[in-house]
Image (cartoon, rainbow, N blue to C red; front, side):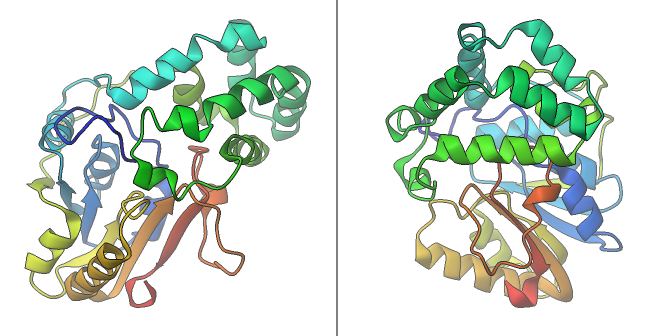
Length: 284
């Protein structure tokens, strides 16, 4: 995700990327390259892999490193924006007791019924679609990112919400609780010595690595809004740094092409993504 706030602010205090996608895709792999962001993915993967976490934003990178050393979460620009949006929930009829009841459900049929009966209202549609309009998003995010968002993005996100509730129990979905309530995990993060933090853009760092340095890559949505020339450069850098059977995971807010058979967005519990592309690097 890309914010208008500049490269030297804490943009994200937590990540909305379901690391279980990576943990399944990277099973048996040894060395992983990832985008540092808020550190969540790197910390989880470091339990079973050697991890290099890279970020061009020095403030974000320092925060991720502190999290890996056991520091608590902080509030970034993205969380402040979401906290502000949550203040309007009572105005659309989303009472606190409704949300807590809904997010503690575990039966998928009950979840969809509750969603349709109590939360997916016309007032919610109107307010959420306005919040996700280009005019509002332009106040927070860079214009390059907005170019990849599908038309009527609010409607698209509402459909992604419903898909998540139809496929994943709310009671164990920490991503849904964080998105709707602002909750974070209570348990402290154990110190992780299995991560090396690097300040750089991804392509530059991977170009500097020895051939075959990594068995897996998780790139967040780094290519959302990127120039075509950077996409080409990153693809070549990954090919240079990858082992023969390496795997890459790439997310995007965009809607997936109809022929994208490697899309696993329906498995990602964090709701937001249209594309969670999991494939061999040779096919990237």
